[in-house]
Length: 198
Ligand code: ATP
Ligand code: MG
Image 1 (cartoon, rainbow, N blue to C red):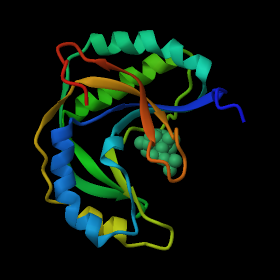
Image 2 (image 1 turned 180 degrees about the vertical axis):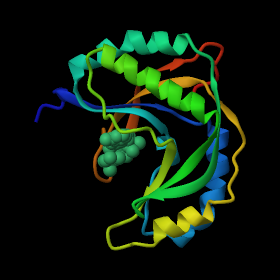
Image 3 (image 1 turned 90 degrees about the vertical axis):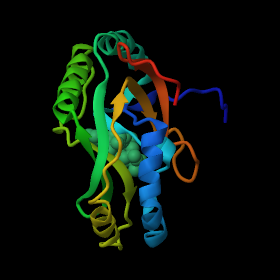
């Protein structure tokens, strides 16, 4: 097969990512859970993110349409002050860390991002935002790990950080055992929000 052939579609979402020190704080908190629940499929720390809008499979030719408007949105707004706090689960299977701080601002940002996407003529998943950072998924025959691990996170209070960059992310570049799940297609700093890459 010719490896030069590019895929015709990309699975895309728009997200924020905590800085490394905020992620490391949570990773330290999770160490006992990594040991206690080895059967869960843990996301890599490099892949941790907070989804604002999920666009799903897009023709690769659509992606450039999003660039200018998302760049303008980022350039026109200040950083958001957030922290990671506590934990929970979706459907007893998906383990996540909660988001604290300017959660109202996070909802407004997601609304703005979704409006921009819509103005570009691109569809997105109209699910209401439930701000979270997914940590792990349990396997089908493992009903208790996500629930227990979520309870174990209830006292966690992470340090505040500025969410200062908007990420347009390509998902599932490598399915199966490959190490790379997500990759920034592009990322834009918020106004006054420049910080070292990471
Ligand atoms: P996989 O689906 O391959 O197990 P994943 O769920 O991590 O992996 P994606 O499905 O590409 O990867 O999702 C990327 C991000 O978008 C994740 O944070 C996911 O929770 C979120 N997401 C996926 N589908 C939706 C949806 N329909 N509505 C809102 N967010 C979604
Ligand atoms: Mg998914």
